[in-house]
Length: 387
Image 1: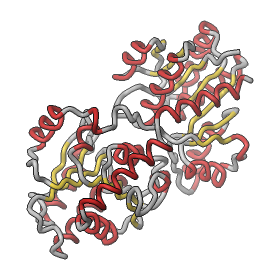
Image 2 (image 1 turned 180 degrees about the vertical axis):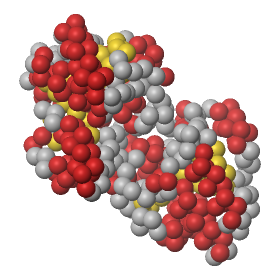
Image 3 (image 1 turned 120 degrees about the vertical axis):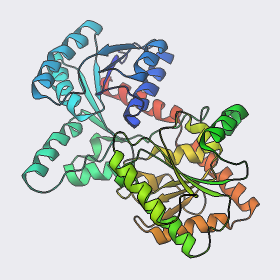
Image 4 (image 1 turned 90 degrees about the vertical axis):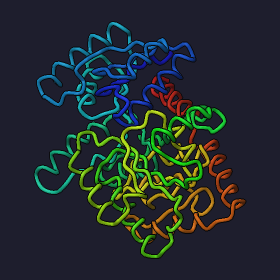
């Protein structure tokens, strides 16, 4: 029996996060081996691309958390499962997972989940309800964790048996994220757009503007460098690259903080970047300063694949991707002083030492965090489920 997989997620919007790109990558791997491939979502920018692969996209209101719509989605998914003879339903998000779980059970399908995030919950009655809502992601016949951190999270907080967990880290498209495939015109255009000089030393924090992503921590670190007189290089530039996703108040808060620290000429806030491979190409140091543990943190592997020097908070799935001092640097979470010191240490390195770190970072990603490895491991899980 061959796997006939229906991946289910809220949407296929490019700004959503890792689940959308991973679903696309796995769909591509399935079509490459001539397997029928299906994705159900509410649609988005990636939906058309999945159809161009040869996959079939089914548009359903799966982004809704309305209990009535979630209930009706059970019957919509049942029809899809029956029509296309689906034997594995792979849910990648909580709301659609509730509908998918019931539909799969009613139709006798295998049910698989991927735990893409920490899905935090608080104390009290509300916290208990949220934990219960999250728990559907642990109820697959098997559960994919996208990092060892998430696997431990599942075992510790949800008492999930290790026998049900398959750890499959996010994978980087190393054909896309390689300096060899970045044209000079893309680099020139991005530098023009962002007003950068050719001799700028660039520190970039990629990620949507959200308090826990650590933009304010990096601003504090640059202020510390300024106080130490260690950022007196006139060519040093810091870029905060990511959409505010409607959080205009937080963006204005960051702008006020930058101004209060007298860093307006050093730190610039840019919106969403559609060409992150080019952005990494012009970047010397990439920062991942998340104040809470990331489930995985794909920026870290993408940047290492491009040979950037990466400084990341020492927690969560992000820390797993770095060999400290060899392929990048880890700093104590929420510690602006230590982050500043890490940046300073990189700036003081010799050119040959920087090149050695870059080469090790590239090799590290190509050995452990490629899209090919991720997809291969996922297809093995599909085969395991129906064997």
